[in-house]
Image (cartoon, rainbow, N blue to C red; front, top):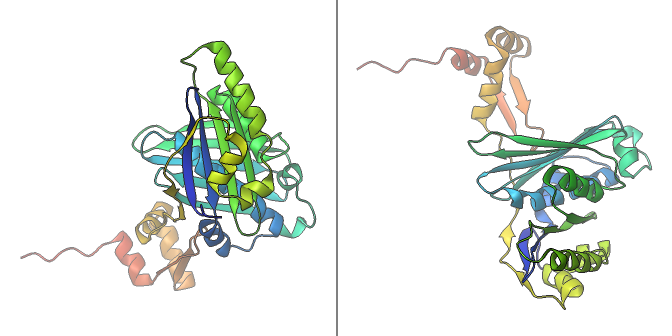
Length: 289
């Protein structure tokens, strides 16, 4: 695999069809290293991360897209987010002791909903919600695009212990002959459906696309790098403490002596002594000259 941790756009010339292809390896492993997920949870998490990287291409300006599922199964929450700068992070929560041998999406999440949240920087956030009724995440995302965006979209996601991969094709609003547009979409969709999970995880982006579409006029754009990056910071942690209120935080400091907060995404620890807490709510005044 020569396209580890990259996202690439492609276009079919003389059609209104675009595509995206992604592969995560080191970024995927970095995210797994901070957790202790059972194998089937890690595989589902990989698909969510690959999907987030694919959908991040819908951001026209700086911002972030989040894919999150909430259910009443052994997995209560799975979330992956990707910024326009291709920085990934995510997490899975649940009762992993009760997962045992189950692996299907329905068994893992139970009755669930899928929410896609788009947060453009400096603009109002938008969220679309659909039921998580498909057999896999790909089908659920295709239904989201059909219902929320009204754009024919096909998605394939795959993951194993080492990497996660995804491919998306989408028909944009037609600017050419409607009958030709429908024929183009039908032909390319049929070819797309022949892509196997093994090919996604073992072949380079170029080889996958050549295998599927070598008879089409296709342009593959330069790869963009993807990486794991957490947005936590001491300043954000301080703001979270301040939001709890003076009395509660001081009581915590008195009871615990040292307040330690660990980021659930990256396991970074932030420590606050009683002096830190005092200065947090009553910062020292600068000297007067």
